[in-house]
Length: 80
Image (cartoon, rainbow, N blue to C red):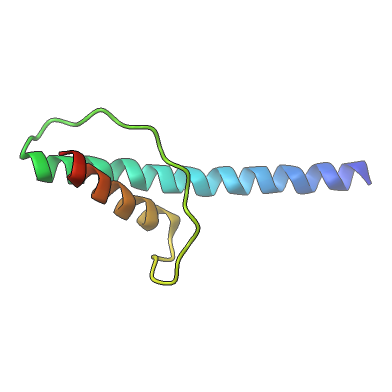
């Protein structure tokens, strides 16, 4: 019983970490692109902390990376 519980918790942790890393990778790339477009600079900006992944809404893209990219793009353009 303990072994099954440990396995379930481990799989959940690994899968949530993988999805969060895809979201964050998309966020960082989107932020860099948005910041450079808004500021007109070719220098890479300092990377902000990755925000918590929001719950998916009806019109959000299917992939975690795309969701993070769009969120980062908006934030980068606002700060650039």
